Image 1 (tube, rainbow, N blue to C red):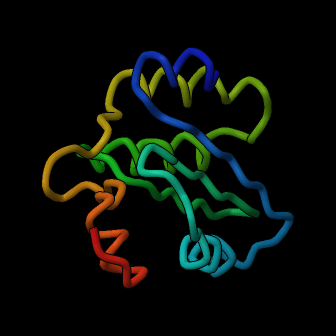
Image 2: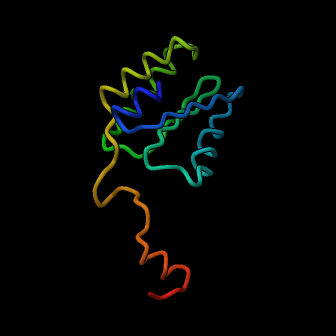
Image 3: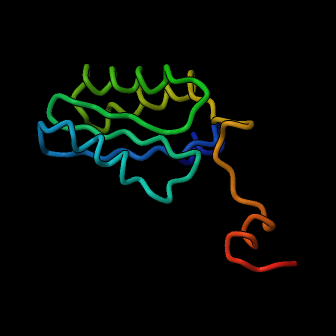
Length: 115
């Protein structure tokens, strides 16, 4: 799925399953997602809950993915539904509100070097 979607939509889908009804695990995972890329789209799920997060221009994709996981038992069969939704509604965040790599000048300032 990622090989097809990555080339088409520039997205990296990561699905994390928890064997727990504790939905705070999804929020904890989001809070600890350090070093993630701007094209990561993460779907965390457990017993009766789903947390989807990532940078996208269209938040509807996250709501729709949540509904897909809540309405269908997670299995290999759900991946085609996930892929179809991402093809339809995912758009990577671009422009001034997106996360970008710092410039080399910013890195020199950050690390206290001059050029």
